Length: 149
Image (cartoon, rainbow, N blue to C red; front, side, top):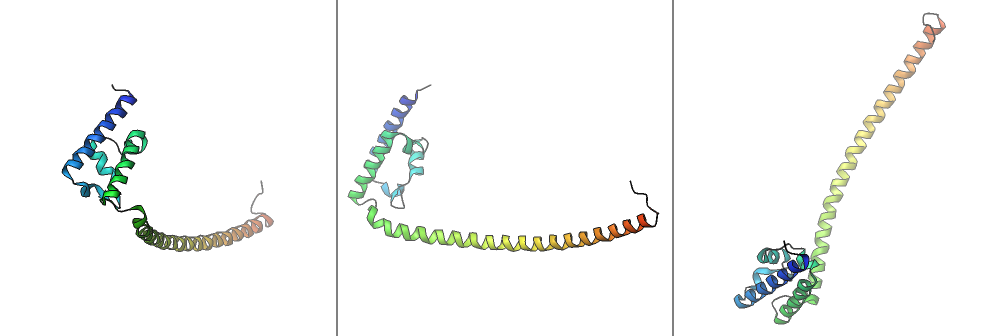
């Protein structure tokens, strides 16, 4: 079994070979997603976990350098150009999600309020029954038909 360092070196070599293959084929557009390289597709192509791209320092720095190079070449959109549209799209998606959550929350609140009202009615009815049975019990005790413990 390979040690962690050996595995890390193997992953770096695999990543570098993959980069050279992409440069030779020129098919970077298949790996671009939202202005950066698609980490999931890269990890699949390199046959290692996506976490390698974040946790292996050599692979991480090579990836950052590669993305900077591709931005200079115009393959990836620049960070500044993509930021405004990215922020706008994120805000839009957040608003949609929160609107959905708000609707669900309102529905849940309505259901809980209805249940609460039903339970309050039930408690009121049970309290009335308890008072009635207490009065009956007191009457039976006063008339001597019920022995108190």
